[in-house]
Length: 183
Image 1 (cartoon, helix red, strand yellow):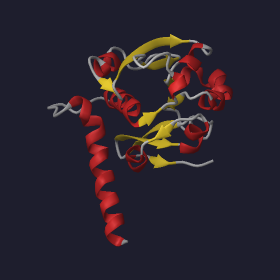
Image 2 (image 1 turned 120 degrees about the vertical axis):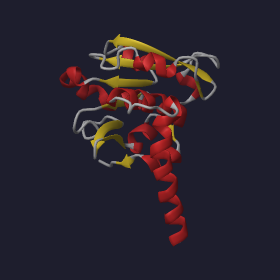
Image 3 (image 1 turned 180 degrees about the horizontal axis):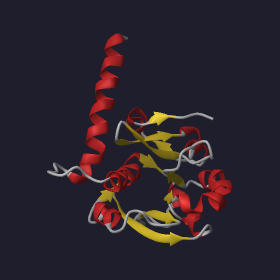
Image 4 (image 1 turned 60 degrees about the vertical axis):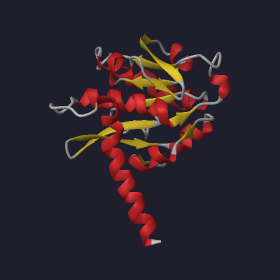
């Protein structure tokens, strides 16, 4: 049993390094906060599965929407450019409105729309939308993944119960890297 826990901690530690670096590779300069968050968004697309009915066709892309202000600039586009997640291309849509967010697979909810988006977060999750935000208490507000800064590094909290309610399946690999939050 002790061996199993030691193995889990080793794998989790390795993934915390590998997940953001999987997109960037070896870098001379330390990536910015939003470089890392963009890499995580891409990796969420790789490690979360959606029900088939969330896609118009077998070739349809995974859509990442930005609700509110866009803190990524062109970093997110560069991160997903020419890459596949689960055999699908990844498309980024900016300035989605509250209704368009429902048609995305992943929605980054910027704090600039917190007041209007918070009441809708549980509904998005129920429709198979992986909501991601970086304000303190995002998962308490029924968001699925909350970016947090721990010891100067970007980490995340995750609410698997909300994802499951919307038919999404979160890989165990992702769950071991993130901090699992509960309601």
